[in-house]
Amino acid sequence: MYDKDNNGLLDRHEVTDLIGSMVEMANSDLSREETVRLVEHMFQEAGINKCSAITPDDFAKVFQDQMDMFRDVHLDFKGRRTMRRRLITLSGSAKRKKTKPSSSRSKVPSFQDATMPNELPGNGFAKHLYTARQFVENHRQHIVYMFVFYAICVMLFFERYYTFSVEKEHMGLRSLTGYGLSVTRGAAASMSFTFSLLLLTMCRNIITVLRETVLNHFIPFDDHVAFHKHVAYVALFFTDILPDLNYWLYRTLVGFTGILLCVIVCIIYTFANQLARRHIFNAFWITHQLFYILYILILLHG
Image 1: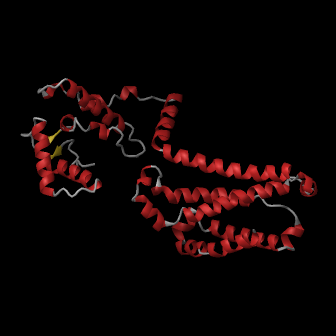
Image 2: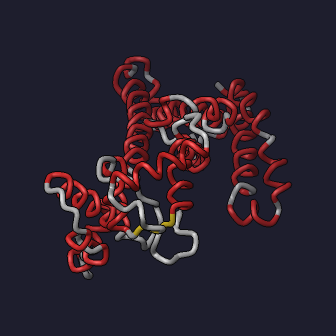
Image 3: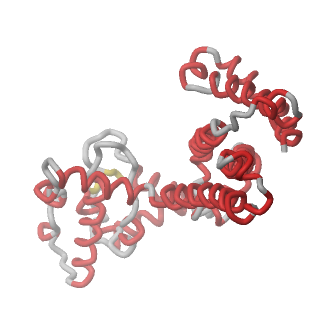
């Protein structure tokens, strides 16, 4: 990232930019001059103060006491599978040098040998397994929260379904409407949760404030838009579960507001797809303002 001329080396100016970036992320008030002096001191401690540029091996030598900090640092680019392995190998070589110090730079393991391409799976099942493991490793937070989200939706659905199918059997509702009422009530409970979460995932000001807190280490706030879309698809699924009773649909407030809700949902979702956002963004924006009417109808429908 900081090798701006792509020559495989980092000069002192580029190393200073690297340290300055870390200092900025740590919200430190270290000045540029102090950062330059810090880099000079680190070069001197590593015994390479006469070098104008450093190789990856020299990088491990300079940061040998801080290599644990780089162990889990990697960029999430598809196809770049060796970056994390290289950083881990550099970390290991730095630790070995720390336990067995040597002034000879020739004894430092080669950066090219550290990639170890022969350990990567070639094809078939091993390759798919490796890809799956990398995906889980890079998206473990997302997987946990998606599991929690789906678990809540399923539990809400089956709690209402069980209540109206078993616990309220004596009221005669199930014998009158069959299991349609139970399914509808279960879907309504899950819809209440998903449609409430839809608004929460787009509260940008609140998310911006929370991103500056310690919660940012545990909740992937940067992916709130993707999560908003996912919740919307789940909400659409539960919206599709509706009773087929003409009287309730057309002659009551519940049925009439339900029809209007379905119409508004269809309009919003039609103009929310990727094609519409790309070519007719104004239509996407205008139709999304219907959510005010949508939530008013939800209150009346309930």
